Length: 386
Ligand SMILES: Cc1cc2nc3c(=O)[nH]c(=O)nc-3n(C[C@H](O)[C@H](O)[C@H](O)COP(=O)(O)OP(=O)(O)OC[C@H]3O[C@@H](n4cnc5c(N)ncnc54)[C@H](O)[C@@H]3O)c2cc1C
Image 1 (spheres, rainbow, N blue to C red):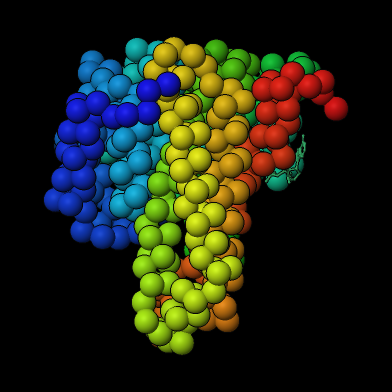
Image 2: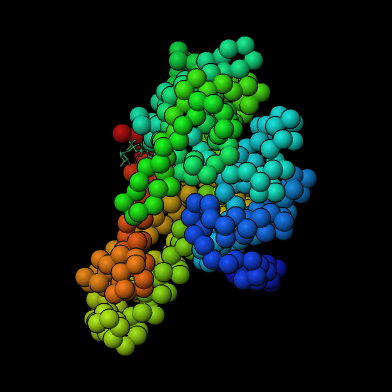
């Protein structure tokens, strides 16, 4: 692996940085529902960057894997939106498995940033073991009728469309009776109920389906083959570089804070103890490791190899580091670290108490740490299954 950046890559990074400086007016990149995020996404779309990695024929820029990584890295460092599920999951899946009609209808809208997508996979009884999902779709002529419930549907309240997994054959082996649909969120019978999270946000939702009718032509791929197609959807952008890159801003601010003369009685103490110096040094070291683990995944993809255990290593290390960084920061700030956003004496505007709460979910989302360790053990190390 060559760790140095070519001149072309460096120029591209500068181009991305300049784009962000010009077009980002500030907002909450998470969820992407505020005006600043919407207008930034529109600017990305106008520039062809929303679908950077897509082939040019579908409205993308045919970017290389490393250009995509640089774009993702810079977007996360600067806390700006980077595309969303339409661009990085649904579109690529449709390019491979979609009918011409589906491509014609959906790809231009995704490329132009006109639709928000959400993902209806998890259910109350199906998370890590996703193939045990129970939401049923029953054929009725040219339509299917969907009944059931999804949960943890991020962004469902602001989504225009959902890509959803349903059970269409209850007799077949569980991976073989699943069908993958696209559904307009305005279809009668869909109800979305937000779930309040401990960090104050409500990005998650429960999504209920009651006699929801969907045309058979909205199936992605073949009936009962949805499991294998959804696996493709989960395979896109697996470097996970956004996790490490998203830590850079908070970590730099914490380090700068530690160098300040007494600030609210906290700054001096941070700089003055060896233990705290070591904590910052540990995080700095681990961030370099996390960065190269992410680069390794991208490098494999760029060589046509399929990262497997490597993605799990990057995912589990990166997310556990997010949590370590938050915990170390909170401990360094002492009791002040407990103060939340909006409290005038909260150091760094309460950023670290917020991080502490919001990173709990990191080791669950997109495959838990335990599940990833199983993958590393079996596929990476060749150990027998338990
Ligand atoms: C931030 C975030 C965003 C999400 N967004 C979405 C979304 O948009 N759409 C969507 O469909 N879902 C979404 N999810 C849900 C996510 O996919 C599930 O939370 C995840 O798959 C885990 O499932 P679960 O929560 O049901 O936990 P479970 O699978 O019930 O796991 C519970 C515990 O058991 C452990 N465990 C389970 N199986 C094993 C095993 N085989 N070996 C060892 N330990 C095991 C787990 O590691 C965990 O500690 C999101 C989750 C998070 C945190």
